[in-house]
Amino acid sequence: MTWRPARLDRLDGHDARETREQLVFRRDFNRRGSVLARGARMVPYPRAEDVFIRTTVDDDRHHGFGDLNLQDCVMAHKRVARRILPGIVCGKYMTTLLERGIQHEMDVEESDTRVNACLGYAGAIGVELSYHIARLSDEVSSLLGFLSSSI
Image (cartoon, rainbow, N blue to C red; front, side, top):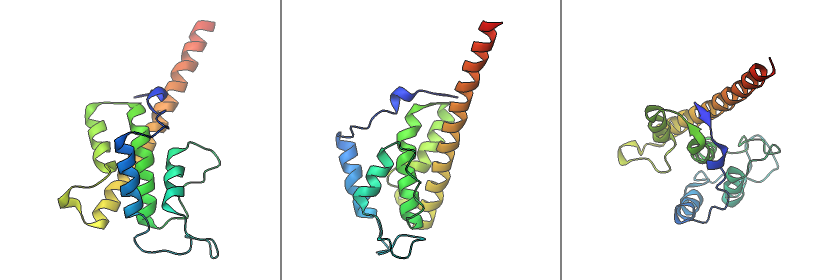
């Protein structure tokens, strides 16, 4: 498993799929009608557009999605995972398994919100772990290459 960062840099996001994804994200966002952010008494609930931007930008100042309710949190993490997955080089089996969990809209038989949340949560965690393993593997490989060339 390796990491190809060149495939991740799709931040322009102006293709038709991205526009549709924005519309569906806005439609499905905050279905519970939350007014206040999770864990903060006087902080307003984030807007769909702001959270969508947070899923697009790689920024260390971004502290995750802990201010969102569970369904919105899973939806945001799935979107981040869909951006990361194309950069992870792994087998076809693992790729299709991870894609299944992070697909944008679930199939009709998976329309139960609990099933959607479970699949999305597992898929997002799987992609995130694969990403970190691939990055670590690349770092170890480059260090081993450096050590063997200096001996």
